[in-house]
Amino acid sequence: MPAPREAAIENRLWSLDEAMPRSELRALQARRLRETVERAARVPHYRDALLKAGVTPGDIRSPGDVRRLPFTTKEDLRANYPFGMLAVPRSDLARVHCSSGTTGRPTVVGYTAEDLETWANLCARFLVAGGLKPEHMVHVAFGYGLFTGGFGLHYGIEKVGASVVPASSGNTERQIMLIRDFQSDALICTPSYALNIAEVAREGGLDPRQLSLKIGHFGAEPWTEEMRNEIEMQMGLYAFNNYGLSEVMGPGISGECFRRDGMHVQEDHFLVECLDPETLEPVSPGSNGELVITNLTKQAMPVLRYRTRDICALDDSPCACGRTGIRMGRIFGRTDDMLIIRGVNVFPSQVEEALLKVEGAAPHYMIEVDRPGALDEMTVRVEMKAAQFSDMISQVQALRERIQRAIYGITGLHANVELVKPQTLERFTGKARHVNDKRKDKRRP
Ligand code: ADP
Ligand code: ZN
Image 1 (cartoon, helix red, strand yellow):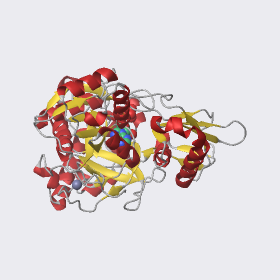
Image 2: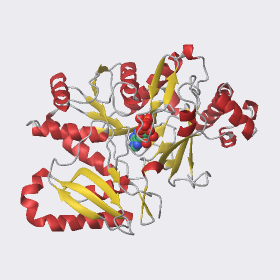
Image 3: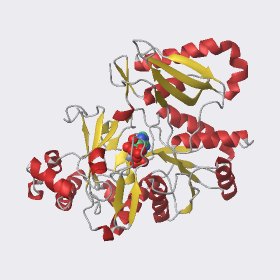
Image 4: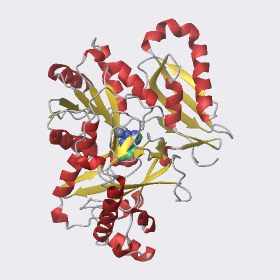
């Protein structure tokens, strides 16, 4: 994990449960895990899977017993589309959301009124950990709708007592006008949209650092520490990372405290494991693995050992903020996003990290992979920074080589680097897309 970059904000807890002694937390997890298995056993899919695994709720005595439970995958949720995974009658649902379908057909998730209350409190926890106060005005530029980002954060902000500007996504000029006129204190969106907002503001003659924004809570897509530096420099705010996925709940599974050295997992509500995606055995402490999450309190649609396909590392060392929840590092990438290029595993986040280390490269890039002959080729299209563009024409070759070296240093691969003019690559209002894989057989080494 990178060195902590503490934000100058007050260290406040939303709930004392966030600082629960570990021994108490383990006992609570054991109890809640047993209750969750009881609830899940009402779902035909889990009834069969538990029977097959030979486990009954009574067998669950400690959090470690989670390893006896069956896994759940996105395919399981799709096979039970739309409401086959509900553990409550459909009439008990208070709301329905869907995953954004980044990797295929969306999956449906349901919430009872109690689930919505829990969710709002969990979002309130990470928002407060990242400096949100009741007197703040918060601009939410996450899409409102089936996506969990907009509504999830919305009710968390209200819970804190701050005021929400439910701007939703799109129409960036209007977003900037609202942030400026309302003097909003906090911004909520994807990290790539934050950059987009900064850029459009500058184009309109407004330095985004002059806006009143003090903090940003960003998530919903992988981003790097280099991207955080870039956003903070461009916008003059403290940027915090938060993580979640709709299948488990939505945002609120984990978030950063003022130390910004990993995201505290809200372990009284989620049991996390970090497993080798091939062997499904736990990785050694601190190593990267697939995050597998089990709900501990969800009523409507609890999932057991959900395979998130997100790769990260867990850190159980104590944190100076007083929260006792284990910390997860940045999501390195999803197993679905991992490219195998000439037999080498590459995540888009590694390319992002490399190119943002190079002066003159803008944080806008597109990775194209193709196999024109027998061998894979990776081309990284990178925008040049507007400020440098005019006086850098003569140095284009040198800049290209620096980026190539940086990518080689991190991935071990030689990439073709194409420098393109400022403003030429696509901009995103939600989750960014950075990869275009044109190969027919993407898995062939
Ligand atoms: P979809 O899987 O269709 O994108 P969601 O909208 O539920 O559905 O998005 C959840 C996914 O978004 C996570 O599984 C993860 O890959 C990504 N994600 C969410 N928050 C973060 C974050 N802070 N850093 C990296 N990736 C994130
Ligand atoms: Zn902390």
